[in-house]
Amino acid sequence: PSLPGNCPDEPSRRLYRYDPGSNSWVTRRMAPHVHRLGAAGVMGGKLYVAGGFNGSTPVAALDVYDPGANQWRTLAPLPKGGHAIGAVLKGKLHVLVGTDHFAYDPG
Image (cartoon, rainbow, N blue to C red; front, side, top):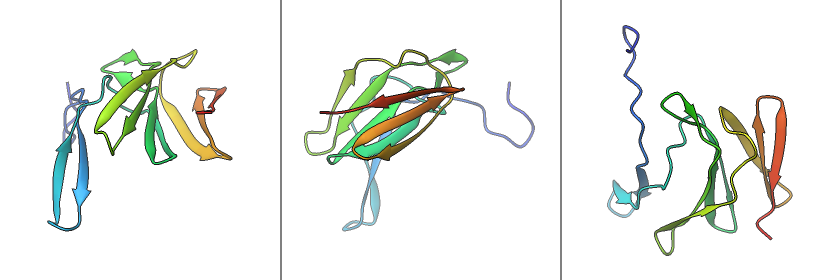
């Protein structure tokens, strides 16, 4: 149930890209996993999304989106799922889940 004044949580795998030429949002391929409250970062022109929740279930998946191919790929999962915070530093995606720190090196 949602709280008064709030929207209900709806798991979504949707991805949109803004097209400045047409001043519109374009639907892209859906992600393989839901990543509500997940971490994300861009490395090498690709979007990496990790952790989060699907409803109340923790998600440990790490998915990467290639905008040139409009394709998603699932990589090795995080050792632990849940609410994640992330940043790209020195070519690695650093993800914090609770007090645990994980770093993904795409190389």
